[in-house]
Length: 256
Image 1 (tube, rainbow, N blue to C red):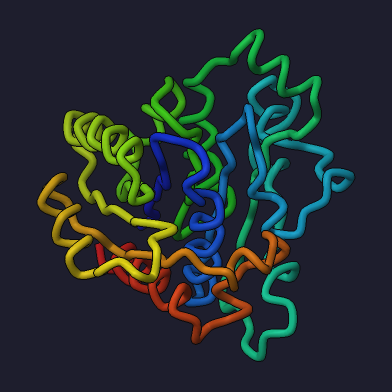
Image 2: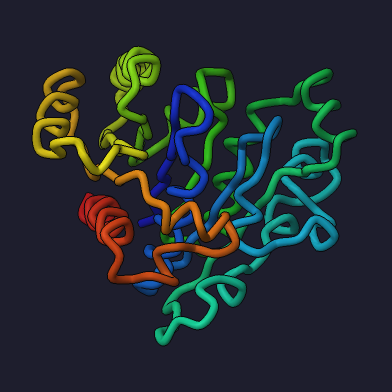
């Protein structure tokens, strides 16, 4: 049975899209058929991690929402584009539905909005048409109508936060909303933690604060930054501590 996984953060800049891409890639490496939807329509970017150029994006989530195409017509197979130079092969498949990065399309979304109900229809159609095992939704930061929809329909919600007081406060709001929406599986991922921190103490503090499981603590890594979003880090560097932490997240997703 297909699972919907939403990856969310209350604030921007948490590394949410990078985590979404790496989680999706490791799910596909295990042989799963994975769809990825970029619903951060006002500031899209996950397509860069999957090596999809602007000129190739003839269809996007925007086109589906404006009734210019079906959702599956905006889904691009991207497995062959990632993990350049790795010795293993991805056993499954990744399909990416990007949001448009054209200025006119972004301003139209901000000005006119769209029927959020179409998102739910599109998610269901994508799962059915592409026979997906997992649909990963890279959400818009904060809480708005489309984010609430994504959270409400999720089998798994992963909330990404940095060890920062503003993130801590925003995450509390998000966790509260998720509980009111009865999300069945909620995990926290702490990103960009300084390596000088006591990770065990940080994990206990965060789990006690939100009464939720911390799936991983990802260190602030120069190695990840050095890749500059040019590929999927977990595929390129399978033995790196960052990758092993992402694998912990994937293991939890596959176990629910």
